[in-house]
Length: 439
Ligand SMILES: Cc1ncc(COP(=O)(O)O)c(C=O)c1O
Image 1 (cartoon, rainbow, N blue to C red):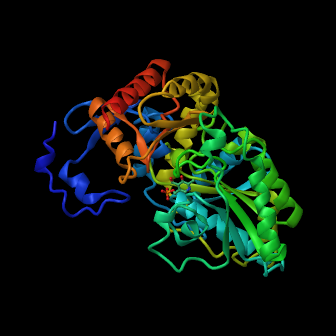
Image 2 (cartoon, rainbow, N blue to C red):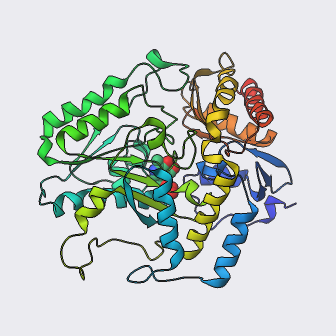
Image 3 (tube, rainbow, N blue to C red):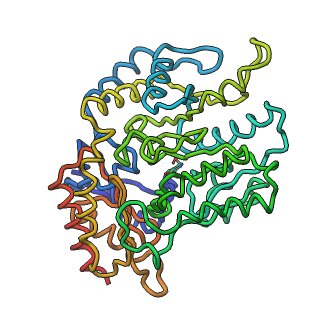
C-alpha cells in the first residue's frame, strides 16, 4: 500500500491528462494481473478498457513476461538498419499469415502514431515510385483518430488534437463522420443508416480531381472519438470508390487489430481488403511499445525495383523491430492462439451487447452502441459543462472498482478479451450504479 501524498507528482507532464485536476486527487496503479489492476491504495480494479485498448490477453501473462525477461538478457538491442535478428523475420511471417489475404510484408514501428505516419509515407512514395507524383492528397475523416504525429493529426478529425498545432499537412480533405443519433441511436452492431456517406468520397473527387488523390485513411471502427461503428455497406463502398480511381485505402487497425471485433483484424471481420493496414497496441499485448504496418504484395513489389543496392524506402526507426518488443509480440501471438482470443470476442459479443444495452433508460444515457467486445455509452452532456458527467462517472467507477474510459461525454468499454460473463455483469453493474449518483 502506498500513500499517494508521499509521491512527488510535480515533474511529470502527463499526456492527455488534466494535470492539475489529476495531481490534486491522483489515481495510481501499482500492479496488474489478468482482468485486474491493483491501485496504490490496495484495491482491485476491474479493467474495462484493456489498459488503453491494448492488453487484449489480460495483464502480466506469464509467457509474455518470461519471453521479455529472457530476450532482454540475451539480445538487448540489434541495429535496425542494414542488420537484422532472426525473430524479427519470424514475427513478420507470422503476422502476414495471421492477417491473410495478399498482405505480404510488414514494416515495424513503435506506436500507433508512427504506424499511421509510416502508412501515409508509404502511400505517397508508392505513387511517386510508380511515376504518378501528382497524387499527393490524403483523405481522412471527421472524428477520425490517427495518433498524434503531424501526419496523423492532419488526416485525423478530432478537433482538440489539431487546433493548436497548425499549419498541418497541406492537401488533406476529410470525409464526413458517420455518427447520427437521430437515425442510429441504440443500434446493435453495424447501424442500418449511413452506408451512403461513403459516397461523399465522390464529392471530394469532383472537387480535387482523382489524379491528385493518393490515399484514403479511416479506422474501420472509430474508437477513440467515441466508438463509431461503420454503417452497413460503408466500408465496401469506400473500397469500391478507391478501386475506381486508383486511391490506396488504409485501415487504421491500431484498436481493431488482434481480436477486438471477434476476428483477428477488422479486415477479416468486414471482408474488405485495404491496401495498407496499421497496427500497434494488441501486437505486444501492451507489454512493450511496438507497431506494425502491413502492405499488400502489389505495394511492396512496386518498391522492389531499381538497383539491388539501393535503399528502397528511406524511412525507419532506431527501435523498428526491437528484439524485446518482437519477443513480446511473438509470445503474445502464442497466448492469443493458445487461448483462442482472436476469435473469442465473436462468442462473447452477444452477451456483452445485451449487457451494455441494459444501460438504456439509465440516467443520462442517450445512446448505447457496440460491436465485438467494444461498446460506446453516450451521455447527455450537462448543460454548460461538456464532458463533466462522463468524467465524474469514470471517477466513481474507479473508486467503486472498475476502470472505464471516457471521451467527451462518451464512455468507451473495451475489456481484455479474456473477460468472463460475470465480469461483464460486474462492469455494467458498476457503471449503472455510478450513473445513478452523477448529477
Ligand atoms: C486508431 C488509432 N490510431 C492511432 C493511434 C495512436 O496510437 P499511439 O498512441 O500508440 O501512438 C490510436 C491510439 O489510440 C488509435 O486508436
